Picture 1: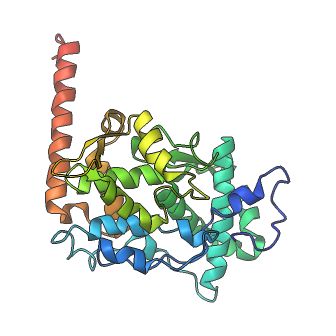
Picture 2: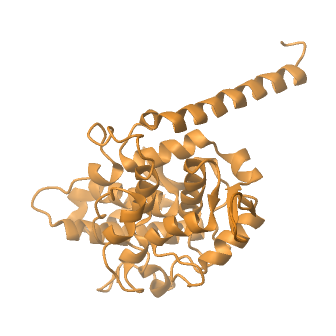
Length: 318
């Protein structure tokens, strides 16, 4: 459990039990060598363990690692977000991870309530004994908010030290209305969009579940953080037009294959998704040559459409 002792700063009105499982206490496991190796690399856990949902970073790494022949030489050149945050000297890593877990819990509560976030509030959560390590703890918490929940924690007022939380990649839907109330599902959505893009712009149900199994998400099995993953993916993401599906080509079964929906294409781009996954992987997106070229061509096409639209709307100016 993320809170194995009482947190004196926590509001009595906050549903502690429902959120305490969200925080990731343990360091992230090493990057798998390939997609099929990924499930074995996950830290063993029980269904109630926080580690059971802390491995979305594993899944994003697995997507890129499965692209054989691309990006393999970049691991030594870049440092992933998971490796870049090193603990201060003389402070146990577990202690910093625990404080980061508490901070994630607090940030999710603030995001759910749409409340303002201040450094002073976060320092209370961190506890005065760890205030000298606040920068590192916040970095750890922010990285987990980004990778697991698809949210950006940004300082919007450097003078008053106020922070805000934004949905990543230009997406406008966080999935909080579906599944477990108040838990953002954007991280799962980004993972699916990445898997589809990296698999030739379509992914079968089998391929989707293979990726999601790294996050301990299985068909027909309710997840205590994200709810019913089958309903979330095959229904809600489809209803929100982020995903669409059709009969899988070259398949002798009635298996579906998923593609980006209209809303996904309108709100984000392949380049944004690639950059996000490459960041987690610790790589330059250009090291995935064919994927980068495809994403770059899409960027150029979008720019040309914008120029043409502007010319039509403002012929005198042009």
